[in-house]
Length: 174
Image (tube, rainbow, N blue to C red; front, side, top):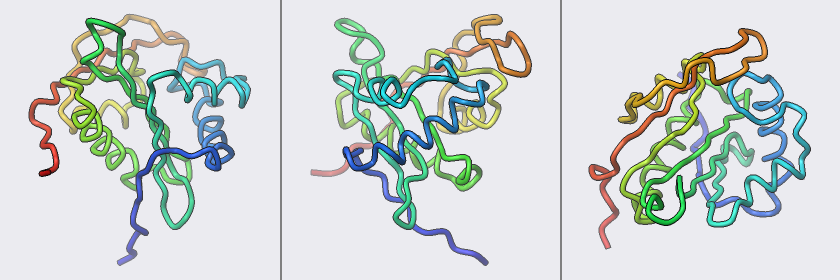
């Protein structure tokens, strides 16, 4: 039985930018899961990851960055108690549990940062692995945006709004 190297999730550092860009570009270029222009520049991608108030984390396995996520308030002001996040996993690490571990880490981090709930505003309906994972992690589809995403191969497809409370997330003991 093959054992996988342990996954370490940590805040992103400037030295991670090239690896982050490689993952970001690989995920976005396919045009099937994110609304970003598949031709987005490295500078544009990194600027999005530096959104004021956002927290960017990387997942590292055997010294290689295999995933990343961005965590921020979904809305400012009176909506700032609800978190929002975006996740990307290197194509070479798909199916290895990286997304699940980052999702669990993100839920815990969100709760520690004081968020009371998490909402995904735009989960592409044809991204079945993501929809399945978020449901396993307690999210529900609370809305469907008909034909809201222009999929590179399938044309116009639905996008989901997914939501979960963070009330059941246990904070670490002090």
